[in-house]
Image 1 (cartoon, rainbow, N blue to C red):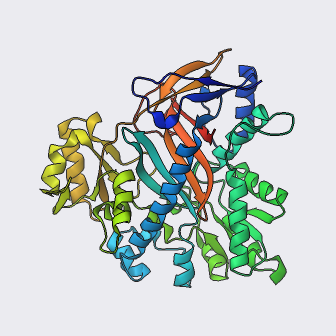
Image 2: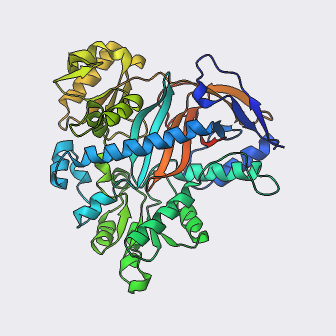
Image 3: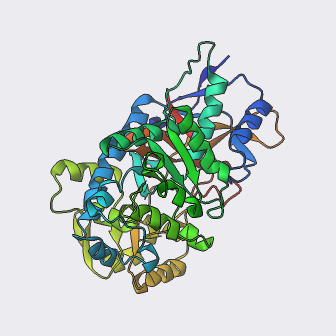
Length: 455
């Protein structure tokens, strides 16, 4: 029988997480086996420590993340698009590498309209509540398959005889299917969905994509996973068999690193297939947009500025210039050099914790070298951001070989998934040994993932 139990606050805990957690009556080995079974054959790394239950947070906290995320994404979109009137102008403004100058739609309105269909901001809980670390805007978001897999286990383990569970959480595949239904209706197209990716890049397998296509088919959608060389089958066929909408579940850097050609995708786009999020999402994804957002735009209302100041730590694009901090004028580069202990340096398009230097974790010489390199970079595409000391919550974990759970105070990074603006699940990552710092589930053996649910 499931039970809720009170957990005491850790020394650095935060009431935002609440004081209750869910505990299952299922044997530890059953939980471990089910978690590993659901995520099998997707390319997800083996984790020696697994969660014993979903991460539970109060409904009000859960709702706050999605409410703030939706509002911030709207501001992010406008900020990115105003950097230039055309794609060419934005490429220049962002100093985008030439490798990203591909896979554009011929219709600029459609290209811009569907850039923010698939979004995952990342938050930590600081002393004053949720604080935004970055926006991930791409059809290839991490956390979608993982959240779906974890949630299936928690629903199976915690459902009563009537199928009811003692928590609330949307399934990301179900919400994304609803997004595609709305998209097909908006475009007056049949709901035939292409999921485009490659099992030869990004460390994933075909099952990573097939899981989602199978889920869509179970909901009554026609869906198919396409490798890029198979995409002629999406458009070179009878009109009623064409796939005119779909998910762009890959990144250009991953495909280039894996030797996967993008020409098949470009051909599909040129023949009328809309894949979301469009290439314009790269501008929203760039951390430079957070710098512009934090600095403020002339069109922002007082309410916009209040929202940004509440959730986004002070962030600036690195360059030799004047700006302000806490309402006072500062010379940015001397300020950055002097305040290593309170800042983080990030590359504009870095992913998975790469190209991130946390000031409090390095010495002064290393910090100054990183700042100098950022300034000297040809594209000038780096930001500095106020460091947020994350607060913790207490979770129960299962270690390899253990026949009982153990408690750890962890500092989770929370990633609310939004598809077409709809809440689609809350991905959570943390270090199973209680450490703070950069979390890359594919990079460190202590990294764990889970799904957060509302109670």
